[in-house]
Image (tube, rainbow, N blue to C red; front, side):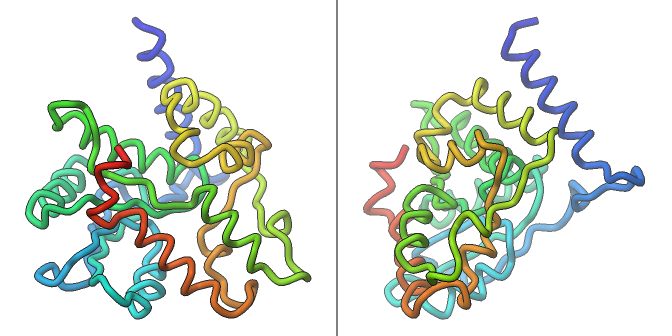
Length: 230
């Protein structure tokens, strides 16, 4: 068995362990949890896959020049979910932007979606674009965060299993750091993670931040940029 196959097997095993709580009960949603859809497909000019429903409620009303369609689901996507994502991307002829937490679980979700698209493209590229959390998010948040709050204060310590999963992911996907950014990768290297809720909490930031964040997220998935983010 190749080293890549061994790493994937180890990553999968750790994933199963991480999904069990201290009492042995699952801590994540069922793998067949339905895919939520929010928005009008007939008017969509931007397509997102998000892991937190509140993002749709936050971004949607603030969109000025693009109507957004949100596909919403937490957890590693099933084959049925991946087929549905491909259908939306092909039907709308739009790339799909991924937005989730800066943690191992959501990054594994992104990589599963990204790989599924790469396998279907002749050149091996992908129509799944990583829109956050990434270094541009951190830079923007730092410029707007209130003096009484720092990014360090909203970081969350990773579990030991997630630290090992992150080390394996870096070996399996050496291009991942270039996607999320050096600072984001260094946070995970330190054993900390960042919830997207903390980066969208209005009370933490000065006025105007959320509007700038929405502009930043949209800029990652507009069709005019798609050809440059493969």
